[in-house]
Length: 246
Image 1 (cartoon, rainbow, N blue to C red):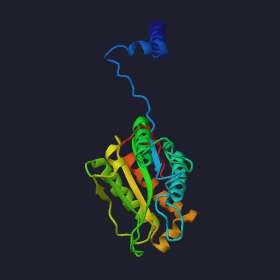
Image 2 (image 1 turned 180 degrees about the horizontal axis):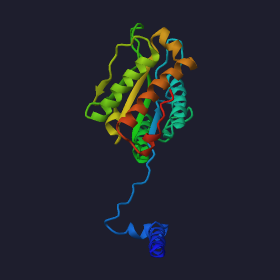
Image 3 (image 1 turned 180 degrees about the vertical axis):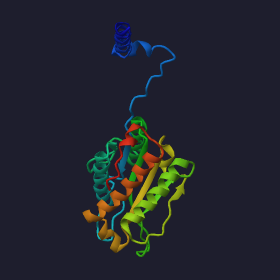
């Protein structure tokens, strides 16, 4: 009797090894009753440092240039996101504009090329980094804009506005704001938010935005909100690996 059970046991082990072999698994996946496991999908975010090249953007009261601050914050943000396993694409990584000298309308060509990079990348999210300005020097505070018709854009913008406020800690009472005419917001296929990190027309804020420590705080607030949004909306398998180290 013991010999009989030993034979059956060995036979079952042999069947199990055959059925779990790589070739057997590949064969069974051809049948409808075998559900193919989805491939891991990394989350991709496009960071767009606004302006560049011959387009300086806003010029601060201290003569700082928006294009330089945009790029600096974007580089810091890129590094933070990549440390969390996020795939990051930058629309520019140097002081250049996204146009050619032959373009008759360089501003429109630049915007079109930024939109093209975002849409062709298959990105899950996009963030455009900018600085603001106003005629009155007392106006200050970061503000996040989103496409008025995008519910996901609204959720991301509101989350980002809150995280920036918490990280900077400057008693900013601004709220995320809907927009339906900013070119990039209306033309991109994934949720895109525009972050106006501060007012270069405000002497105090213009000086802060030049400081690396402050730029890191700004990038940290943006990064935190992106990671929270990714996890809350289950974007890609990479969301499971987000560690929230910050």
